[in-house]
Image 1 (spheres, rainbow, N blue to C red):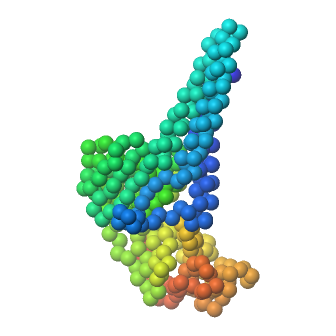
Image 2 (cartoon, helix red, strand yellow):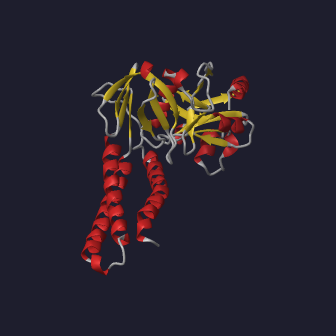
Image 3 (cartoon, helix red, strand yellow):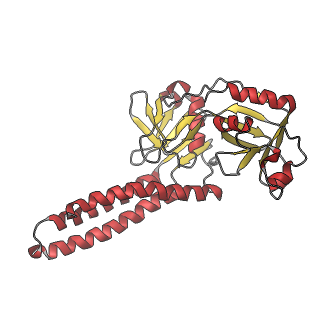
Length: 318
């Protein structure tokens, strides 16, 4: 392989490996509860969107490694210039060094990124530009981000990029729901999910239309937010439809803090905690379970309520 091609090969490999590594780190963080968006008591923000520490740390470490390796081979190439047949090794080593510097700079931007959401505006701190306050009326478009990690690109009415939030950012789901509700006309993601669908209310469970990001690109898809007291669970409409048609026995929430399940009583094995929590329920009923599951269902839907809920789900767009 030509030394000149080394930086290109390294870049291609890293572009494939980084999303996998970061995605794995995100899933572990979500299971432990570290990926939950929280309100900011100091600023009064509804929630904060920021990149994860893993992202900046990964780019920083890779950058330092490339700087060290590239710098070493650059020095060796300069010292042995007379022994080399051409400038290839020197160019390749210099390219690795430059790539390392770029990764370190990107790590600084990733660490700096922050979006605070308020009732009527966003406070945006981009990677490298100055912090600015963006009124919701100044948002011109929200569309899928064309990158390996997915997400949304948010632009102002003049088409200027305001910020990009990837689907693995902390607070991403909250941001998507907030923008869908606050700037419905600016949404250009597909498929479109109407925001004027009337919620469904049962005795112990409430359901409302709630667009959810899916896949690597974070494309918005029809979803439902189930609420029972303090328990909230976003789930995809298509998966709930499969559940109601008995194609599956259990559906889990898209978030893992805590993980919530909607299931039929016969979906668990006799030795499972699901079976213990639902064994006394009617066969044709749905139970909403959340940790700790031994406390029993947070909500139960059965009888005419179940029929009404099924019809409400069937009427939602896919």
